[in-house]
Length: 263
Image (cartoon, rainbow, N blue to C red; front, side, top):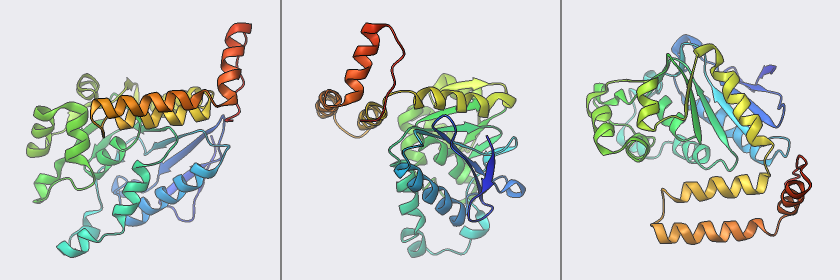
C-alpha cells in the first residue's frame, strides 16, 4: 500500500485500497511523540475519510519502535493550567474518538501515555509481540489527560487500571490481550499486514450496518443497560430500511457472495 506525505511529514497517508485507508504516524526520531500538529493532521485526515465513500475502514500505525511513546513533552512543559484546559487538541481528540467508520490501531513497540490513549480511542487494537502498553504520566507529576483513566478502566477493570496509572508500569502485549485491552497479538513483522487484512474484511460488510453496529457497541459504554438495549433495537430496525439488508438476505438464500453498496 503506497504511502505519501500529507501536508507535512507528521503523518503518511496511503491511497485507499480494498476500501482501507492507512495512516502512519511519522515522527520516528522522537518515537512518534504526539505534538499538536500530528494530532491535528490525524483529525483532518479522518474527517476527509469520513466523507469519502471509497474509505470503509482505517488503519493507524507507527513504526517498529513505537506506535507512539506519548505526548510531546517539550510542547507541554511550559503550559499553564488555563492553557491546558483550553487546548485546541481537546477538540481533535474528541473528533478522533467520534470517527464514525471502523478504525484499527496496528501497534508495535511502545504505546505509552498519549499513544496508549490514541490506540484506545480506536475500535480494535492489533499488536505485535513486542508491543508495550502503559500510562506513565505519573512519573512526570501529572495524570493521563486524553481518556487514559476512563478508557483504561473500562477496558481492563479498576484494579489493573489503578496499577498501571498509579505505578506507571508497562504491560506486555500478551498480558494486554488477556486483560481485554487489545484484540490480537501477532509477530511484529505481521502487525500492519494483519490490521489491513482485518480492515479489508470489515470493508466488505454493509457500510450502514457496520456504522450502526459500531455506534451500538460504543453506547454500551455510555448508557445504562436498558437505554443501550433500546438504542440497539432502533439501530437493528433501521437496518431493515436499507437495500443492503435485502441484498444480504437474497445472497444468503441464493448461496452467493453479497455485493453491498452502502444504501
